[in-house]
Length: 365
Image (cartoon, rainbow, N blue to C red):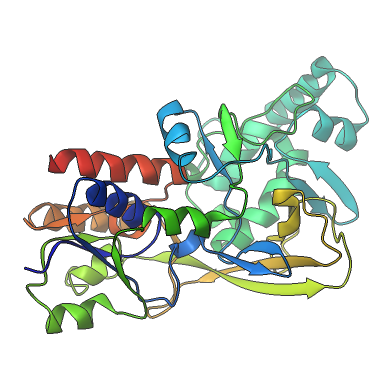
């Protein structure tokens, strides 16, 4: 055995695990099939702007310990996520709050907004929602649903809202205050200099090999490490023996523009079904950039096919049932730790990924 741990994937989970184990004197080899570290939180510097190559990543948490842990590797700025939604020629603030309702209905008070929403919901007579559309309508009424939820959700999932299960939308927070802060978490920000620098620091002391496919590597080096930390696709590890888990994927179209400000906000959602992308990210606004150019990214959701990069697990009953069987198999692998979004087949925010990796380290002691 040359290493204590072979860590498959140089994303946040693998990097946290590698850092902690290296601190404890363990020898770690980190491999990744991509040509860069940091997984989906990878930031590429373009014209002085840190471009989130795989979609916007805004760190937010209510866990003080995780916030302090992440701040050991970078200083975070005070960025607050306040997206804007475009519907036809109208602009709305997100999340749904008094700024949204005032623009939509020309009203001023929470009482007026509540009455409009309550009247719309009452007029629908939905007692047991049969699908996502009915569930959303029963929570926010017709106007908010039609303008800000329906088209965006159908693009995100590639299906009509009537065909999607109700449980996907368990709740839709309505805020009757003039507050555009998207997250309720106490701590929020973007690392100054981007996420790649955080992962670089975490991986100091570990050996790193990029452009390395785990399954090829395993064949050639079956006994290279005492244990494996696997953050790749759960079903792929078991050669899809029980069936293939489904994902949604996202295609990114990046563009550098010779102007200092394209849309005035980091995140602008496009909620009409007819516009093929779900949102445009303008990266410089994450770090309050003053560059004379700007970089934007359009996000196009699509169906995932084997061989493509998976993004969001499809957590419907069918896939969840299959994932549970794979997790059972994973639990029987004595020398393998499964983790991260793909290894667990769960959608995780970054703070939960870091917390899970730290918990896995603790379980090793």
